[in-house]
Length: 282
Image (cartoon, rainbow, N blue to C red; front, top):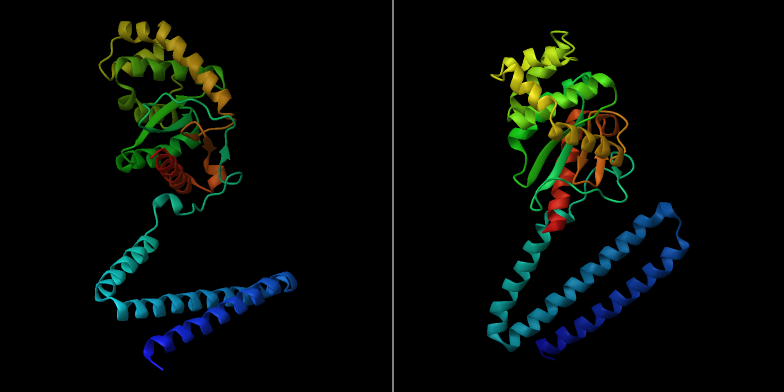
């Protein structure tokens, strides 16, 4: 009996064993209780080993018949192993759970960012101490965020003072100094105890950044600022925001530090969901 015949008989025997193991695992899955599922897993692992053995035996036969096939087959197998060992980012499961760490908006809301960007919006108030504490985390994140992420701020108008601050923020946007005044505004309110709740107090604050009182008041009372404040009201309702700081990823997912268990986890969730959205888009 030659080697080829022996190998064929070996393959037939293994095939019978794989089939028997599969039948046994199938029938056992119905009868075995949940705590013994590990035994079924072991049977399935044995089946996989048998299938691999059959495949390797087939490759040995192929090697005996064709020297060229023997050279090509290992290269193909190696490529498959590499592909399986390094899955695409989209296939990796996130540790964050919908309904627990964040909520999904239905329907998703439109964003103001370019179509090639994933928008991460922060809904905040200058008067909120939690937003003040979150700001250093945001600043660090902004230095390292993915290039496909577009960050925007949306001031919440939960009370009259917050509305004045919202108008001041959008006046700063119009004047091109929004990023310059953000951290000083937080500090002026929380550390210096200046409420910044009147046009006069706000004008004096803006003067520190080279903005005259006339220029500030012109922006502060402009139609553009009115429109942006109304839009912020609308977005806060659409995003179902009840507390700040809150983050909205691509108009689809809403979360906050109380849901994730802290600011660092909230930053991690922002990164995870933004990467998920970017992967789905590509």
